[in-house]
Length: 150
Image (cartoon, rainbow, N blue to C red; front, side, top):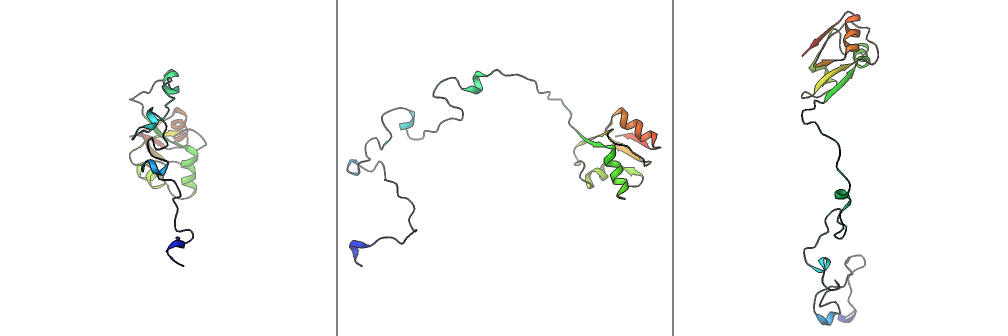
């Protein structure tokens, strides 16, 4: 081994690219393999998302439609069969309120809860929620319970 045949250990070097823009003698000077003029030849160039070379991009050609109501209330729905399941598992006996929903991950503390009418409720419960569907309210009262609006 001497200075003429030294080389790095196998796998220790990664970058095998030719260094561009390091003088004419390197063969990659001048335009540094970027061609002549145009956006791609400039430093700091990055193509915008959806850019189509100056053609009107798709997201501007396609018409806008729809409407977003900024006052919309998003309710977290809890069905009667879910409440019956809580009773069957012995989690609740007489009252169901926000603490029960939060503890059982049916809703978070900041969500507004609406009781929905899927399934049937056999237990007599005092159910507290922000809203009730007509069928859910009727089913709770038919089981001898009480529907309390928060």
